[in-house]
Image (cartoon, rainbow, N blue to C red; front, top):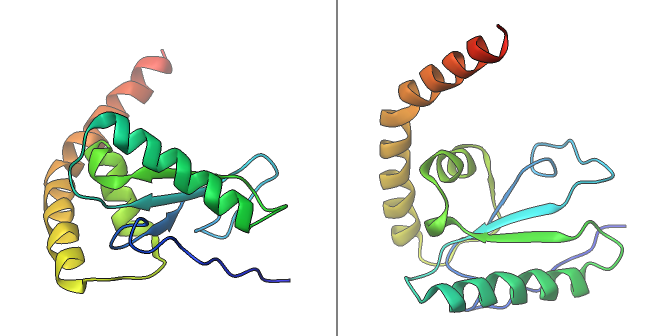
Length: 130
């Protein structure tokens, strides 16, 4: 049975994105529901409180489902933010212009940095294979 989720608008942010194993259709028993949101800059304590309160609210709504893991995308490393934007599933959007502007800036930086990421991964794998 599908469950619907009523999100905490406006606290949920402008454009929540589902990412991770559930988003790619490969959930597993020990997995969680990975959700990223974008919020304006705020003090670190408030960001952590927002992540926790949203995760708890989602978990209450989706009883018996995997627990949620909410992250503020604008605080994540570029590598993860880029992967979320390029491979995640947009849940809903409020303010499409702001979303497009943010995603474009992250994608530009991510794809510019991607060769460095791949080179680092290649070097790392070569080192552990010795």
